[in-house]
Length: 228
Ligand SMILES: Nc1ncnc2c1ncn2[C@@H]1O[C@H](COP(=O)(O)OP(=O)(O)O)[C@@H](O)[C@H]1O
Ligand SMILES: Nc1ccn([C@@H]2O[C@H](COP(=O)(O)OP(=O)(O)O)[C@@H](O)[C@H]2O)c(=O)n1
Image 1 (cartoon, rainbow, N blue to C red):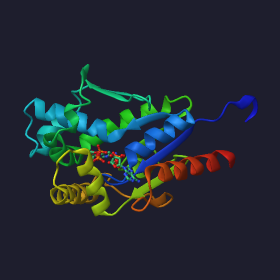
Image 2 (tube, rainbow, N blue to C red; image 1 turned 60 degrees about the horizontal axis):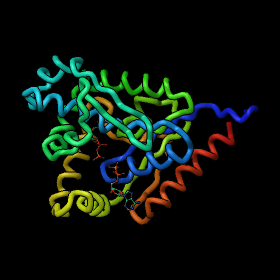
Image 3 (tube, rainbow, N blue to C red; image 1 turned 120 degrees about the vertical axis):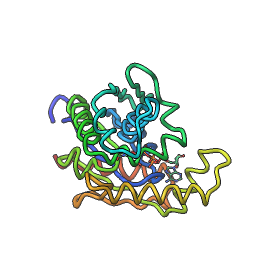
Image 4 (cartoon, protein in one colour; image 1 turned 135 degrees about the vertical axis):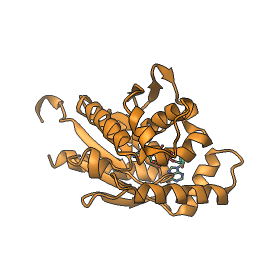
């Protein structure tokens, strides 16, 4: 484009837990001057609200009835992403084991997905320079017209080792089992399951370092931009 003003670029990065979505997306967005949205944090935030308000997580109709209540706000600066629920900073409590073990059940409820998907689309549409959005269904459902779709994978062993490295002292086998269980729940739900879009580029990160994955994605974005 003339005058150096680039068209906004929309990048969708999907994949299961521990494949490197968050670290890669934040770094790519920072490097390219784009916004960043962690959609998993939004599903965790609504789950935190359900748990805090005593909603029965086993009862999809109870979840559906209140899905519109919490106000979730995501800050999209990749250098310091934020997440609040009704004005409360929930960045720490959404990462607890309690929320992690319940999030798949809450995120499977169609009313929850409809509400959060709408929020995600409006955030993406408002990102003036473009955005990197990471999740499970971004390329397939939330932003099917994204300029670039990436699907990250890695072996369950590599993903469990990465996650238990973060959760100090966590047992690798227990972490692996919990990951595989959450993948199965996320992949088998009826409404927008975890899936690779047909036109997504699959990157297996098992044997790659994080800087290598970031470089790979930055190169793919730049190639797309050059081809526009
Ligand atoms: N290619 C990689 N090699 C080694 N460690 C990685 C790699 N990608 C990410 N990590 C580490 O693995 C952990 C999980 O990464 P994260 O980006 O949170 O994954 P996801 O968002 O897919 O769950 C983080 O501690 C991150 O630094
Ligand atoms: N686009 C998305 C993103 C997350 N999720 C749900 O939110 C959960 C937490 O996502 P996350 O990205 O924070 O998970 P991790 O990869 O950090 O473990 C997932 O296990 C899914 O149940 C979803 O359903 N759709």
